[in-house]
Structure formats: structure tokens, C-alpha cells
Length: 79
Image 1 (cartoon, rainbow, N blue to C red):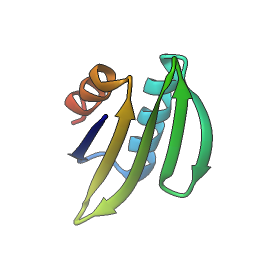
Image 2: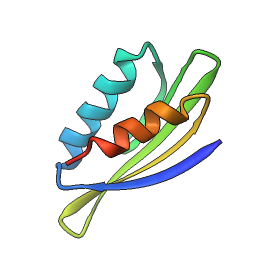
Image 3: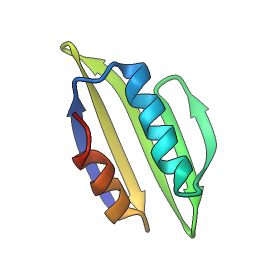
């Protein structure tokens, strides 16, 4: 299991769209969604994400099992 935190200059809405597009494009399904919180499942694992604005930036906390490489890739590509 991997826990990772990333900060981006993207707005919360843009970060959320990028998150859904990236993990949805990998075939993961959103199994639960509430404001700022998302659970994706697929391929025998999961990705949980929390997105919130903090000091004029957006913080994304990610927790995963079986999708560690992809989570690191997503976090590494954030502006």
C-alpha cells in the first residue's frame, strides 16, 4: 500500500477532472464520490483520493493498493 501527497497550482475543479480522466482512462471505476473525496476500483486494487484547496494551491492525498506506479506517475505529472 502507498500513501502519497501532492500539491498543484491547478484549481480544485481542474485537479479533480485530471484525476478522474487519468484513473478512468486506466479502466478504474468510481465506486464512491463525495465533495473532494473519490474511490476508484479495478484490476484487483483501488485508489482513494482527497482533493482540497490549501493556501492558494490544491492538495491531493492519494492512497492505493496495486496501482502504486500509476499513482506516482499521476502525482509526478501535476503542474
